[in-house]
Image 1 (spheres, chains in turn blue, red):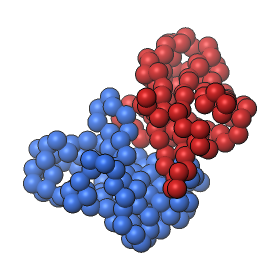
Image 2 (cartoon, each protein chain N blue to C red):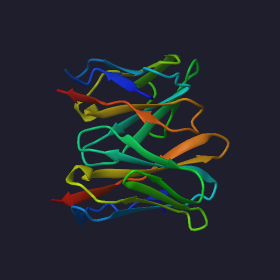
Image 3 (spheres, rainbow over the protein chains, first blue to last red):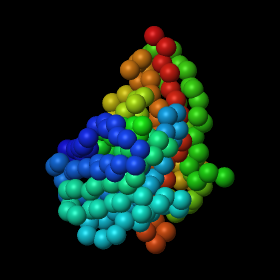
Image 4 (cartoon, each protein chain N blue to C red):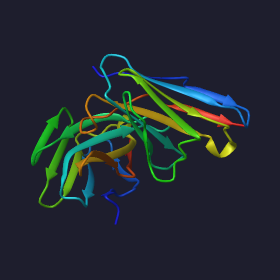
Amino acid sequence: GAVVSQHPSWVICKSGTSVKIECRSLDFQATTMFWYRQFPKQSLMLMATSNEGSKATYEQGVEKDKFLINHASLTLSTLTVTSAHPEDSSFYICSASRGTGGETQYFGPGTRLLVL
Amino acid sequence: QKEVEQNSGPLSVPEGAIASLNCTYSDRVSQSFFWYRQYSGKSPELIMSIYSNGDKEDGRFTAQLNKASQYVSLLIRDSQPSDSATYLCAVIKNTGGFKTIFGAGTRLFVKA
């Protein structure tokens, strides 16, 4: 199998606080992990790509100082939304790939963030 | 022109019919192709992958790839109401590094 988990599944926080989302590959080693954001009724938007042990590559328009990504091991990547604001409220989804990005991506169940 | 294009739909088919979902891509160096299904409020789940020209069948699903026409499709036979979802086409290309491009998705509605 290829199971990816995310924690938490949903989070509500006050404006100005930071939120950390974890993404874990449970039964395989994920060389590459991806972070996506999806607003209601819109398509997936890739935020960044991370490889274990190296800095994440952010897509154009995504603030790297606001969305901190750490891929500390082959099974764990974290996304921290710093100083969250209501406009950051969204569905955050991670995916993991065994290789360097040319293989199938397996998605986590997503984390729904609501910033009040 | 978007790199991966899908008709947004909704595509409505009656239960038991064949649903045909289409996807075109712009970059000829694209090498791997995937179909994902996404239910409302959920994350995408992989349905099929296809890498070479022709058809690939898995149960009620058939993926078709035509690299010359830069076209990939998904056929769903004997459509069920539970197939109602958004179907995402994804294409991987390698231009000095792998990059996955997702289409915006086609909403499918199967009427009981």
